[in-house]
Length: 302
Image (cartoon, rainbow, N blue to C red; front, side):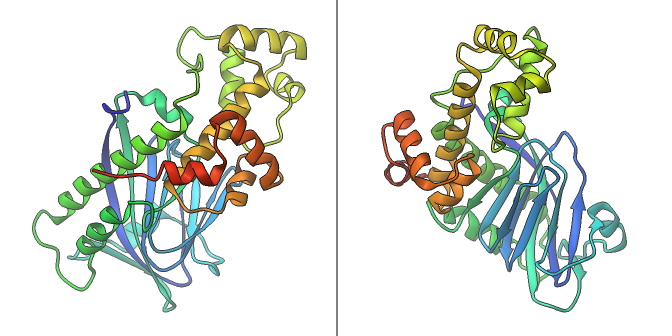
């Protein structure tokens, strides 16, 4: 299934943004991505997830979450569609927007994964990868080369950018999923599954870092604790918190292998208060400490 994964992307625009700047992208079914080619930026999702970005960072929003991209100081946020209407791209294919401060250069777009779309359910709402390290630089450099703002675009250049993005995203997703989801059972989220359990699983996947308990999950789906635990185990084959723990650790494994984010930061995103408790849980699941796992699973893109 992983070998069959293919990505089809659409590049909305390449954007040169002068501080202060900020734009909002509405929630939609389409997965989104932003690649930071130059300068700083910040991303904030409607669910509260956020991250500071720098050149070389790739942001994936697999579930099409509504979000805001901005520089560190912008108080004014406008819809991206409105900005594109009032600031159409120039002959080089670049949209210019914002003030006269430091410049940030982005590639923004959406993508579809076909086939094996159910694999996307394992991805968190926000995936942040640093392409300048861990073998991803081979894609970052040609993307930067293609998106030069000081020249007029050659015929067909936009199509080439999109095709490079297709291959880039395909390899990134394939590697991330390969190292993160291999030990997880597929959950009954398809038609025919228990609706209440499907709802609980959706909550875990969309808000995995929250301090869920069996009682809270049961209450969210309108069930008693005992009934929820019994039906969850029957549908999934494991207890609710065991499933949640494996999901959190699987996502953490993907981030470890495909980024250089600090282990403590990854631990907190996975719902752990400290690096020590995260490391112990990770060793129980994967048989390796987080740092060792990262070294053994560094991506090699071919």
